[in-house]
Image (cartoon, rainbow, N blue to C red):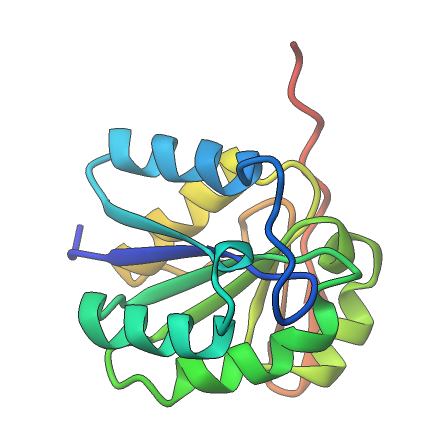
Length: 165
């Protein structure tokens, strides 16, 4: 398994609106990835008055190879800009979007930003499988619960069953 430096990002709802609750989804995914031996850092952009600059600074300092965003419909308008900031960072090889918005509207997201990989539905198991496959250079087409563009076509793998409590 090659080394992945992973940055998980919770985007802001506006250019400054502190979140009253920690971003649990990226926290869960980050914890499981750390248990699997990956180096993970979490950035909550709701805590920054200048989120673009905070993202640029974190990318420069941390040099992640993979960046994952939790995407709500209210944060989606900012994601195209955040995506381009990530792509301008030489270390970033992969950008992943997960959360309610890509789950509900995967076709729209992939038409807007076809270079991203989407994690649909409950993302913990899917994200871990996806990171393992990307780290090992394996094909991602057999991973349940993802969407991506391949050879110009939208690909939606079968949904992953919901986790049992």
